[in-house]
Length: 455
Image (cartoon, rainbow, N blue to C red; front, side, top):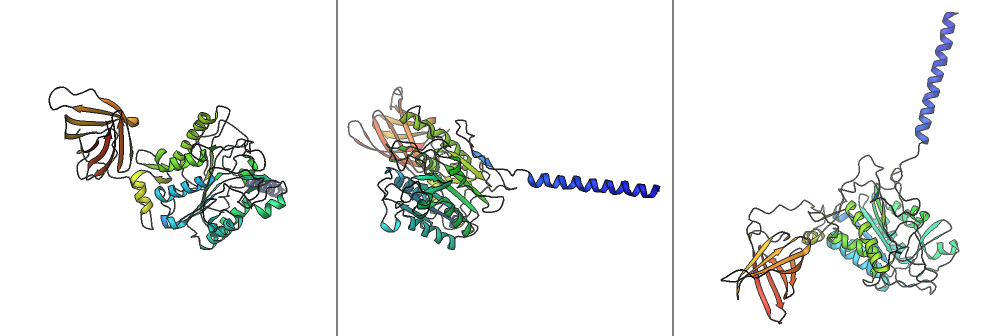
């Protein structure tokens, strides 16, 4: 009897153990999966970048240059007269294409531009967009990167997100939009079909009301954002970024002075170097932070405090603070012109103690001093101070130096320009010296060669 009692108790314990194990497994499988930090409602307090790392090991680099492709679309003009005309979408597309090839290592023949100001075969019609997506799906390298950018009108109807090509017919009927617009799900399906592992999407599609007054809002909705997100957990793609021009509940505006959208204007400026670190590299995290700072400030400055536009990002699978998207200045041009293959993003060697020796072709002039002599009346001294400020001093051959003149300077790779109230000069580096040509306020042409002053 004791033996039988022990057996029953033992069996009861085993059943309880199995039950607890099953409950534990159910709890694991029913636990909510991690999600990208997409804002659920309009908020002025968005995170600096909405980042969710679904992968165990986040990617720290983009694919090699030869495996980078971009489809860039800008739609200003629409065949349907009910759809309001835009003034900057084509410029957005063209400027972004240029920045990608010049600073971000995209081969020019792998950047496809469809815009209202292009020839017929590159018009942003529904057929052209779908055909280009189809071509990419058949030829795309599986370990490559696809950047998809759309500037124009977008709509949400029937719980679905649509992009409006130039031949779209605006309607509240989702079935009609399905036949004339581009359902975002179609874009995602083509991307999945291509098998590409990395995707960057740039959306500037919620500007004004496409079927109403030009100044009426067409705010971004949560439903619309869901249409552009990929599932890295199920391996639709390995890593993706979606950059939205504005937050949920707000609209995006056009920068009329620049004939662009504020979002793409700032995006291009950031890629060109405005968001670069001290090595001239623009990381994904730095670019998002730059957009979230620059765009709202410029919109408020131009349109008033009541206008709000703050971009945000959904990021999965990338190490955002290490992922380099572009390189600024002359080094960026070198990356853009490199042969097909891995792009070398190694920081350039630091200059020697003889900073500015003739062995250096060019470098950052900030914090350096240069002299040109002899010139009539003495030696010209330039001090390139921080923040683009310049101090110009003329030291006569005899006597004390003249008071310094204040000025400004700007550098882009090998080119440096500087100006004071009395003269304007443009300079280029030549074997470690700066050869400058300019004109003073009397209209006299001047040529000077500046040499770096040893520290």
